[in-house]
Image (cartoon, rainbow, N blue to C red; front, side, top):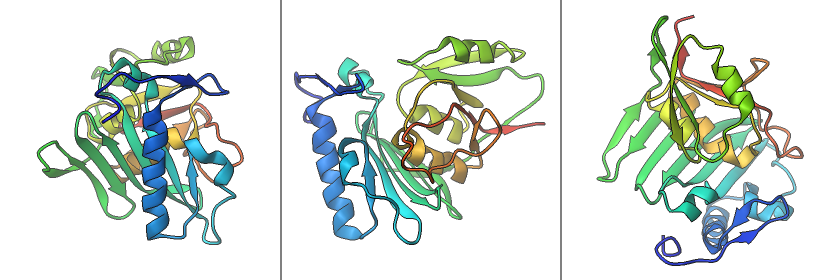
Length: 235
């Protein structure tokens, strides 16, 4: 937030994605904090070369120190910090924090999902059930819309689309504010891991277009397949 409150420079990484000093500073803080608390390996977007794989128990931390860098640059407040614990390819614990909004989402397997508002009030969250005939509430990317996504949406009877940045889109499904989030475009493991843990704990799912739950077991392949985030559907 210190960087966000002032003018800052923007660099371009090899994959043409933007990078700011906030990405690197956040990464340093998170790496230091996690390393001091456990020996579990850490896979983070800004230090890929230091990750050699999950531990013997199949565990690793999955971190995006600043998700939604484009939103950060635009200063629209829709960026997050994402930290997940992966076990045998499954996100079993996740925290998504939106610093500018001062809102956090957290979820843990077997415990449930929660939202903490800017006043520090923690409330349980759950996905909601879409009823047949109702308008689909769909959340979409503010910076990464694709023609494939629009074509997919045309198969729905009727829908209303809300644009949102970063992993907050998945969290909207988790708290019952949206029914679907289709992402027919590129994302990486760290973009989804933490919010995936939240939506799973809230009763939802993230599935590939083949109907298989999104997995994080293959850390050599950093790109996710196309997917859809689901709340609950009548059928």
